[in-house]
Amino acid sequence: MTREEFDLFLLFAAGLCGVMAVINLLRRKKRGTSAFFLAGAFVAVGVTILLYRAQIMWAVSLVGFVAFALLVGDFAVRSRDRLPPGGQP
Image 1 (cartoon, rainbow, N blue to C red):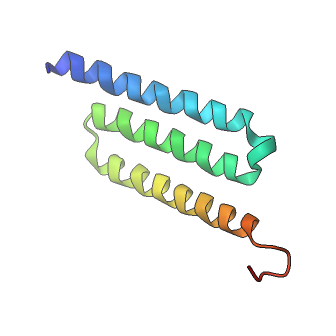
Image 2 (cartoon, rainbow, N blue to C red):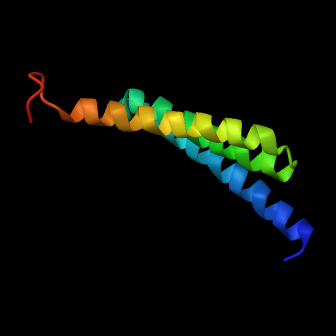
């Protein structure tokens, strides 16, 4: 795979992350707050891909940590929503 093909692949992957973020925002009525966390995580992953393409490695790890934090937040919101109001399963 040449460098040009790899760059095209990275652009496609970042674009796919953007599309998935929009899809999650369109489904926010069904998913609630979790949709915002997941859309933010998709945006962060897309930005991470673009930063990797530009070879800005210090920012890749920083934005990767933001993506990880958003995914943990999404997990926490989904776990909270599955518990009944009393808190006991």
